[in-house]
Length: 306
Ligand code: 5GP
Image (cartoon, rainbow, N blue to C red; front, top):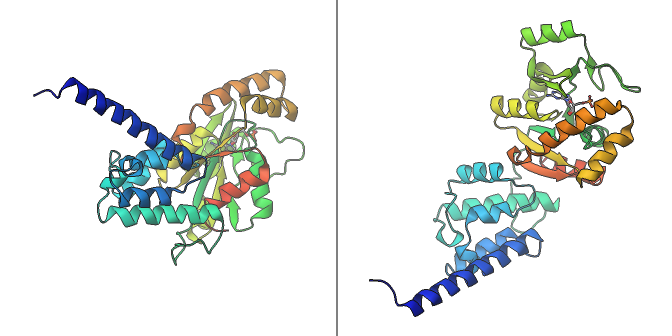
């Protein structure tokens, strides 16, 4: 039997109001006026509330640096279905989600004394891949990390491109010939490698990375997006970070301002950057490079070692 018209109108009004209320909860999490933990507690206390009706997936998507790929992977790890609402979380799911949120909030606060923090801090993240469009400042951020966070090992790539002024062989890159690069590929010496900007080849030597990981060190790879995808495929535990420019105009300004490439090369790199920006949703975290030291700090925070 169909409900009377008046009931249907009332139901649809109530649905709109509920959606609005859930949107308000999400906005509060996005702008930082409410913590995700607080929202979960409210949703568990009252299943019929806006918080109780909010899907866990939507809540996680409000958290800084969490893209859809990372959120779905996290839900899988927590054993929570993407359609699950906070109010409907099971007895075992509730503490798992709260633990996860507490460890994130603990990391974000940069403090060891956040209330409710677990006694044991989360396990360090060993392998972090920093990628992003050309000229976004990956090199500057990774150099800052090398100089200021000695606990992080930075992988030195091999490349067939010529050194720029000031670059040092063995520090900036291993500058190798095409023949040497061919040999390294043939002998499986690379963890990943790619042709970047349709021009030179770049690759991460596998051995030093493996040695550092075996020694319990955290390793940072600053590589292009094709390389990041290869690392994800061969080492799924790696955390992928996408570095973003504050705006597209700023990215163009940084590329032109660097003045190290010909205009033909600049055009080629900008074309690559557009394609690269479109890949950001594949990454676990996004970090905006407005200030180098802040971006570096955010990347290092993801390693849980500082
Ligand atoms: P550049 O020539 O400006 O130093 O670097 C060009 C691009 O190559 C940058 O996007 C940089 O991240 C990338 N790159 C540097 N080393 C590697 C590497 O070992 N593997 C891959 N796939 N890309 C790299």
